Image 1 (cartoon, helix red, strand yellow):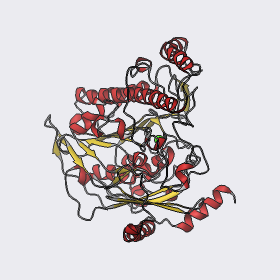
Image 2 (tube, rainbow, N blue to C red; image 1 turned 90 degrees about the vertical axis):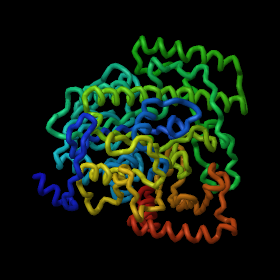
Image 3 (cartoon, rainbow, N blue to C red; image 1 turned 30 degrees about the horizontal axis):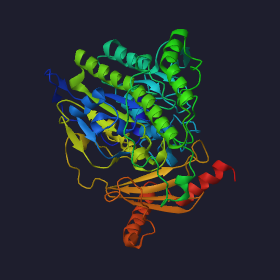
Image 4 (tube, rainbow, N blue to C red; image 1 turned 180 degrees about the horizontal axis):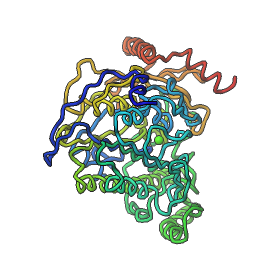
Length: 513
Ligand SMILES: [Ca+2]
C-alpha cells in the first residue's frame, strides 16, 4: 500500500507539524526520535524515583530527574500480552482482540509503529513481543520467542531463530546501543522499542548480580499477612501467594541450575545458590518464619534481576549523550503493568489493586520536558499510541481510544482531561486463578465488579484507605459514592464500546459453555 493510501485508510486526522525547537547543541529538531524502553512486571515499588524502600535505580531515576514522572499511569488489563496489544493499538482488549495471554495478535490492525513508519520513521524493535504473530510495522525486529529465556536466549530476527550466548538484558541493551551508534538511518527520525523480558518470573539475575542482595533485609509490606476479611471471594481464592504458590525449586532457586546455562554460568549459579540451599535445609523453617524467608528470597532475586535493566538504561542514556542524540530523543521508560511485592501476601499482578494496576512511567526530552516534573493526571497504556503519534506531529486514527498525553509532557494543562479510568481483566480460569473483573478508578475511589464467576462488588476509599484493606461497597455511608461510581462505570463502558453483554458473550465462547 502506498503511504498516502495507508494514511487515508487509517482515518488519520489532518497533518499538524509540531513546532520546531533547538536542542542543546543548537540543532533544529522538528520530530523527535522515540526510544521506548519497557520492562516486564517492573513494580513502581522497586524504582528509586517512586520512593522504593528496597532498591536503588539510578539509571531510571535519571530519566525522571531530567524529565517527567507520571504518578497515576494505569494499565487497562494487567497482564503481558493484553497490555502490549493495548499499547500498540490504542484500543481496549475487547476491540484489539487480545483479552488474555492465549490469543494471537492480529497484526493487520493499525498500530503506532506502522503509522510512524508511514510518516518516515525508521522503526526497530528488540526484545519481548509475546503476541504470538510476527511483528508488523517495523523496518527491523529481533524478538524473544514467547516469554524468552534469561540465559543464552533464542532471538527470532526477522523470522530466523538463533541462540545468543549471554544474558538477555545485556544482549538486548547491546542491540539498542549498536543501533544508536551505527544502525540508524541518519536521514530519518527513529522509533526504537527496547522491550526487556526482565524482571518477569522466575527472576534469574545476571551472573554479576547473583549475590547482590545477599546481605540485604527488606521491610515487609504491611499487608503481607492480609486475611482478605472484607473482600469478595476473589481475593481469597487466587493462587499467587508468596506463602503457598511460589515454587521452592524454580522461583526460590533451591533446585538445580537451569538447563540452559553453560558450564561457567552453572558454576557461578552454584556458588551463589548452593550455600542458600544448604542453609535452608539446615534451618528447617515452618510457618511464619518460612513466609519471611520466602519473601526475602523472592525480593533478592526480583531486585537483582532489575539491576541489569537499570544498568542498561544508564548505558543507553550515556550512548545518547555520546552520539549527540540526547537532545532530539524522547526517552520513555515504563513497565507493561505493575506487580505485587508481597502486598496482600502476593506476587504476580492481574488484580485491579494499586500495586498491579499502576505502571511506572517516566519520560525525558531535553528542551521540551521540564526537568524534575511530576504529573498526577490519570493516564494509561491506552494513551501511548496517540501520544507517540502526537510527538511526531500526527493526529491519531479516529478508532484509537486513547488520548495523547504529549501536552501534559510539555507541561500544559489540558481542560477536561479524564478524571476516571476503566479497567477490564479477563484471563480466568488460568494460572494464578484471578477471577474476571472490571472497574473504575477515580482520583479518590475504586469500584470493582467481579462478574460472571461470582457477582461481587468492592469499593475502596483510597484517601482513607490507601492500602485497600477495607472494602466499603456495602457500607451505607458510601451508598451515594457507590451510586456515582456505578454510573461512571457504565458511562465509561459505553464510551469504550464495552458492556456486560459483550463480556458475557466472550466468556461463553472462551469457556465453550
Ligand atoms: Ca508483564
